[in-house]
Image (cartoon, rainbow, N blue to C red):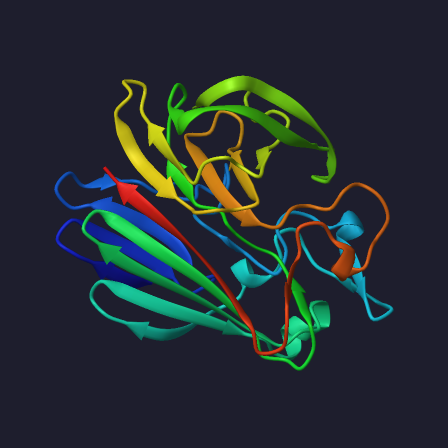
Length: 281
């Protein structure tokens, strides 16, 4: 476990998946991250790469060959190399190898850096195409914050809000309106009975997790993302706030990776980055 800290926060990152597992505020001892009870959900903050969500039949084609990838890809199950660690920051990298090419025939580097500043943790995700041809991928963050029923994910205003819907396999099968002029999502026992809320093209770039009194706990800023998801196991004491550059497949047949909705196209030698900042209050 890699530990970084400053005078306000202490964070722990597991090189397995470069997964943030703990953020504690020093003055109160408060733990902000879900601690991964395996009887409920073992994740903490998995990194989703090179896909977000599930592929139809867990497969895709590329250059006429069929490949298989599990839900959310393989990065969360791979050991990252430690690039650097200082008191307040750490950086990790995952590089393509013979094992990744069995399911994903592209050369890449995925670097993830974590940096503390005051009461904030900034995470930067950078993908580099180290191959000679065009690369297709998705990437997403999946942090799980401790939360209770009655807490609210508050938006910075009121918005007409839709959610994509999924079938029993986690594949997109339609959409529905959540509400007109919605200012947030209140956590209730059955809100995630039909899986995640998937907001396409969100009209805001941050949300704040507030407790039942309205006091802010975590403000997460994620910039301009094509999809924003909220999810938890029904009734569990956490909520995931997930900015995704990607989306599950539509239900149907296996399709070429280049045709998969939400894929990022990266030329040889090019890179793609996005960042999130979590403020712990």
